[in-house]
Each structure stands twice: as structure tokens, then as C-alpha cells.
Length: 463
Image (cartoon, rainbow, N blue to C red; front, top):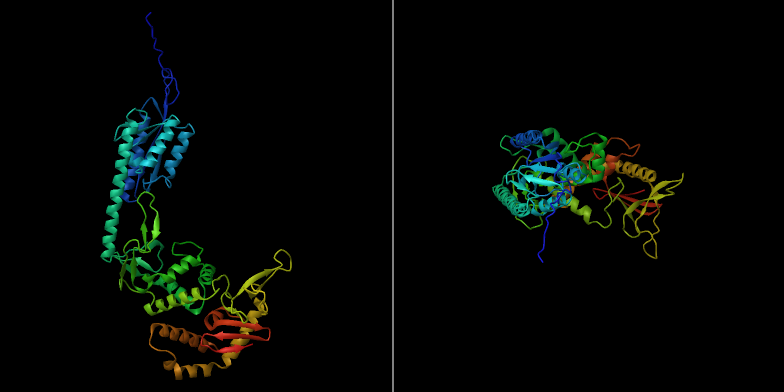
């Protein structure tokens, strides 16, 4: 008995589930991208947008949706490509049936990103067309060709990255220095591309260094600059302590330059990492005019190290932080808030380790008004003795300090203290924050009857 086989033609598209014989306009969008923000590339970007708008609109069977675009964005991953992500989202929500783009490399230079996105779109009935390679993703050979082309695009990106990296390291090895001038305080780009001093900004840099040597913390320096309305290197209103610390530790302010402080981990993620010895670094001495004298810069670095090494002296949220010491255990006083949720709320300063051991410290707490009153008392006693202090220093200064860099730094600190002391005329009537920073080394609290101010010249005054 012979069999009879009847073929039943397909009536639905296997990707879109739309009826095969029903002619319906496809909703079409295009994607355009350029990877740099150079002027010639932006011209290319505008040309792509114009081309695909006209290309889609002239087809009777296509309905123009939009041209999605990203300018000045790398194709190595899709994380920061807002236009690309918006296009995929619209497609998955049914607003697009077909996406057209110039080439596989415009879509993505990362094979994984490219294939993952295309497969996701394909599962939702959305086709992609790559004009240069003539690849339609619904075609049987489409995914194979796409895998090959995406891999080639990724390899091209890796090659470009390696060439750029080599060129950059060659410039470093040749001692060629560049900085992000729009966000770098104190310098402009000279005609030869090197750094030239911007005197107006340089004054702010010198002031930051001066305030730090006076005793100000990065926090208090930032607060002062905000209060005066001075903009940050990036033009923002709010200064952060990290910005101040960066300025205080940047060797470019003393005329030198350390190159390759950070490096790119891999070309796909573009993730950067602080260079701790993984790749070579290059140090260029005397590359440009200094804003800060090298001896002053070195003094600041020593003082940063000293402040960081002192036990528990880490807080910087107040002018009294790291300045008041417990006479019992030697720890620093810190702020404590009492009655935080009622009308009796107040802030006091107390030994940070008062209740750490079974034998608690007996030193008393102090409120800020009391600290200020005690300071005025101590400073007025110091002022009455200032002529003797200055005369004694002139007699023995060569015996006090040798010629080592560290001792010379101490001498400069001492001379700064004496200069501030010599400027003062008459007695102090109220608390002065600048004098607090420039004169006081620390205060030791033993009990209410014995509080000793140690000034920066070593003078101790009990109040």
C-alpha cells in the first residue's frame, strides 16, 4: 500500500510569529556610533544619522522609528552606551522590528556583548542588519558570520589598544608630561604642550599648602574654600577632602612629574587601577616651573606621614580633632553628643578610650566654649613672654637643628610659629581659629585644675 504525503505550507514567520502572506510594514530603527569626540569624528556621526534617516524613510515597506546614537563612546562594552541601551529596551518592548547599523564593529567590539544582545533580540523576533558585512541575523548563516566578524572586531580593538598603550609608554619614557588641564589647578597648557603656571590658580595652591603647614586638616581647608566660594579644579562648588589630599601630595606642584600612576587593566572593560609596580613608571625631574618650593613640598609629605602615624589621631571633622590629649592614657579626645534627641542636646570632648579598660580614665570632658576660653588664657600668657622666646631662639637656633632635611623642616615650622607670634600686638580678647592652628601643637588634659598647652616651639603653659 503506497503512502501519500501532503505538504502543509508554513503560515507564520518562525521568528516573528507574523502571518507570512500578510504584508505589514516593519518598524525600523538604526544605530550610529563614533568612538571619539574629535571634530572629524563628530562629522562622521552626523553623516551616519542623516544617512540612515533617509535610507529607512525611502523604503515603502519600512516604518521609520528613530536613529539611536552614541557619540564619543567606546564600543568595547555596552555599559555606558545610553543610546544603545535605550534602543534595545525599545525593541524588547515591541517598538522596533529591525535594527540597521553600519557594521559589526559599530554595534560592539566585544564578541560576548555582541552575540548576547543579538540572541536576546532574535528570541523576541527582532532582526539586525549589518550593512557593511551584509549580515541579516535571521539568515541561517547569520550567526556564524556574526561570530567571526565580532571576533575580528574584538581583535582589532585589542590591537588598537596595544598600539595606543605602546605609544603612551613611549611618550612616558621620553619624559613627555600631560595632565587634564581643565581639572588641574594651577597650570595651563603651554604652546609646546607642557605645563605653564596659571598665577591666579597657583595662589590657591600655595594657600592650601600654607594652611596645611599651619596645622589645618584637609577637612578644614576644604570647608574654608567652600565658605569663600572658591571653585574646585573641576569648577564645582563643593571641595572634598580627597581633592585637598591629592593637591597636597601631587609632585607636579614642585616641578616634577611621576608618569603612569594608573594603568588600564584590560581593553574590554577599560577598568583602571593604581599602579603599584605592575607596569613601569617614569619620574621626570625639573619638567616645569614649580608652584611649591621642593623643600616645602617635602615638609608637607613628612607632616602628612607624621599625622597619619600618630595613635588615634585620625579624625579631621573639627578644628579640635587630633589636638586634645588625655593625660591618663595618652589617647586623643573625640567629640561625643549627649542628649542627642532632646532639648538638652550638646557636644562635648572626651577621651576616646575613657571606658575601654576596667580602670577608666579620670580625665574630665570639656565643651568647646571651655576649650576656646582656655586657649585665650594660654595664648595671652604666651604673648607676654614672646620677646624672650624669640630672643632665645635666635641665640640657639643653630644648636637646635642640624642640616638634615628633617631638621630643616622642623626649623621652618619653628620659624613660622615665631613669625606668627611676632605679628601679634596686645592681648587676645576672643578665640582665633588661625592662631589655634598656627600656634598650638596639642593640649594635654590631666584634670580640671591642670590643663597644659604645648605650643609649636615646645613652650608649655598650664591653665
